[in-house]
Length: 344
Image (cartoon, rainbow, N blue to C red):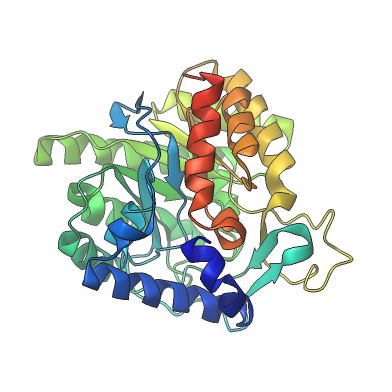
């Protein structure tokens, strides 16, 4: 029996957010005691060079699990090829009122309306500096809830400046459905202006720090064909280094009849899988290799990860799948991708 299988019944007896915090606390304890390397098996090496970085394997952790970078070393023991922490905002904020996270086990889904709850960028950086992890670390940045949408770029620029020296790459989250009006930033004029400012700042920071840190933009699955085309064109125009597809969905297709299925927030897990994969396929066609795609959304099994790669992703990320499968999902996904021989 795996470590996760042993504790899953106890975790599932708790509400979803309490279970999340219990998991983080457990990983902190294991990290402090130096036990994590004994608890998990690592996937075989399957290196990929993406965004100018060499990833030991193509399976990463998506943002959201370790918002404050508290358990980076424990998560590294899961065997991820890369870890993404955050979303972090310039100032600490509590997020939305509780309850705000719900499991839908019948559909292997999760709904959350967390609202970027985090301890602020300075607290995250302090945690990153304490971590011993030397692998690829993405830091996901967002805007504070009380920052007007017309001033959102200021928050992203603060985040970029602060995390730049500590990140292997920086992910720009403009697609969470749980911060009011945030998804407006995916619109043509707004996205054009934001990417222009971020790219200019990246160039300045590269000179200041003597290193180039790639920028990736995280987009929603709830985009129509014209929006995908427009976003692809702008990402290419501004020479953005990567795109993360996708965030959670506002759709409730397939879960509307289930307990908690109509809670407000973003739906992740198995119900978003096909929508996410379809968007990756379309995005890959529009980009035509101009920049790499990191595929995320509904990966519950190794075959799901391989399908994302076949649709055009260069790397994949998991999060909600870990709620239902635990660490074995990481090794299973890595093995499935390796078995396909996919070197996209």
